[in-house]
Image 1 (tube, rainbow, N blue to C red):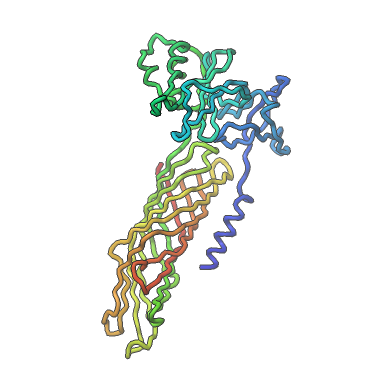
Image 2: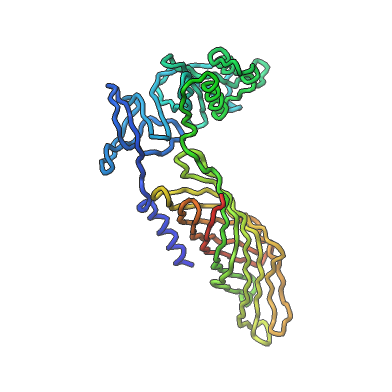
Length: 408
């Protein structure tokens, strides 16, 4: 088992050496209105950036460009940001920290705004942690914030300022739009994008929808058979004659993994949930002075459904292959599982029911090809199978080789 732990640790620490930093085709416009074509490090920013890395050639040295020196930058077929000085309301949306003022409290700031839909009327987004604000403008007019604010009214109840609906009603007219289309609009990116696209179509305006920039696969379902090498030690604090070691038992398991890709940082992070069937069955004979025969036989028949829940991080090697690491907390649901001890004549001296309360940790590293085929090496830390018994302790751990095939 130590060798497997060392192998996983070494591979995990070496991943950064194998992972390739990718720079995509892009451009930026500097303060002198010079448009510079380059390669930009595409990290698919969760928060709007204040700087970015770029290279002038494939083999060039990475450089940094900053908010105060760049008017605009974009990554081909992916994203576009413009620098603008805007009035932004940063009032908290946290129910415990709401303002008592209904109207926005504006502060002038210079920001990189992400372009979501570009046309006669353009939609922008700004994200900073939990803060999300949306902006718009017509052609070259000033950029304005779409106003939405939750606040506490004089009765200490929560009120909502939905002025953004009136703003859109006043400015983005369409003969096909009913008033209910504005009244039912929520302050949400997907709804704004759909609305601005519909407006441009209604008025036969040319537009670019940057939210269609990439067909992202945000959910994967994967069949994952595995080969398990499991270790179980059993100790009795009263009698050393009841201590057993079940080493390197080979078994098969099967899991179905649901993977939810988080929509930022270029799809490098995911939440994983993987219900898995596993069975450990083994027999061990030891010599003891407790019985006249001098022999005690231990039998383990442990079946359970494990449910690892955790996070995964990808390191892209190229467009078709990637390495990943993941860490999970494993919930274990055992089913009709027992550990029995008997004499050589078959008389059962102890019969213990496996009740695994709590869980354990799992760590894995793997490789994925074409978003379809994968292999993972996973180690699970110790799990106690007899934690409802006072004088018994167990340590159950597993090293697995897991194959994967994604159906979508």
